[in-house]
Image (cartoon, rainbow over all chains, first blue to last red; front, side, top):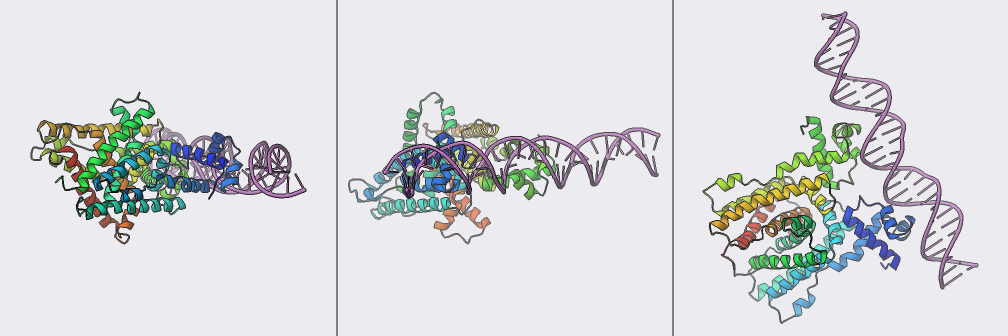
Length: 210
Length: 210
DNA sequence: TTAAACTAAACAAACGTTTAATTGATTTTA
DNA sequence: TAAAATCAATTAAACGTTTGTTTAGTTTAA
């Protein structure tokens, strides 16, 4: 589906409000007000509030796909180095698009068979397959151990970053970082998560640690 | 606050519905219907929907506190063994009370200063302090390395288990476990998470892995 | 002139909450 | 001991808002 500038603006406002307050706690009037348009325009452009949500997912979910095609072809990096690039790529995308990820986190918890739920499921399957390719490559070359639960490994990566984002305030407080500006704090989080996850993944993938 | 049987029944029904559909998507009429009572009884007993939520948190949040007092005194276990007991204890509590944890996960994402938010914050601080005690003990005895980011370690534990719970359906599907009954599946998750997290924590805490 | 963009207003339904009346059991009074 | 009083528990109905959506009309630009 193609959207014009006005529609994209509405989607972006909706993303912001859904992320902050949740889908159900955000009214179409809230969205219309913040977008500076008439309430009727949302039905006019998208059909319904739910279809606006679906449009939001159609548009934004492609931005957060993990891409490994270039990585696999790259012959200058070791398997572990490739995994490390993937980790950084994932952290970068998650933090840059935390709003959309917050919406996704909430939708994941609900057990309903919605269009949005199936989009999330497809995204997860796709990401899993991408990572499996990298892992298998490392296993063939003998760099990685044979017994790797990729799903569980993904769960830790996604879970750790998700949890870090949704408990940012707590993290700032216990580390006395309340005054730090947003940009610097994001840098800090990225670095911390990067080192942390790389250490964990190395323990899960390689022979080095027993 | 003390609650009678009827009130407890209402809280339990509310917990179930909030977990399944979210707070905003659950109406007081839904709760009243499932509890087999009149809508007015919710205002009568709790004052409002929001205060029912607060009552729910007051009652259930104490059940999921991590307790380390007995562990610290125990002289038969090594520091790492104590951490492993703590991991299993956390997994057990999370899976047994997934409904309440789902509600907590959703509330954590919202950035509002509510009563519920402060209860969650207190719970996290308390759990963090408990774990810090165990870690420090291991560091003093020389079993654990000096440089440990306890918050980040907690983030991985909480995040991994949360993510596992909220993507149960996905996990079942990619592992061809759709037919497995709930009890067996929970056992499976517990075991998998237990082995996985213990491996990760060992890598973060001990000298064994480089 | 025509079609898309946009508006104010109205729509019915659902929302959380309150009201006022009724029930049912326990306690007090005669 | 029987009648009266008391009080919490419960109900159906109504309250005023807010909800997502639609309508019917107006503006704008090609």
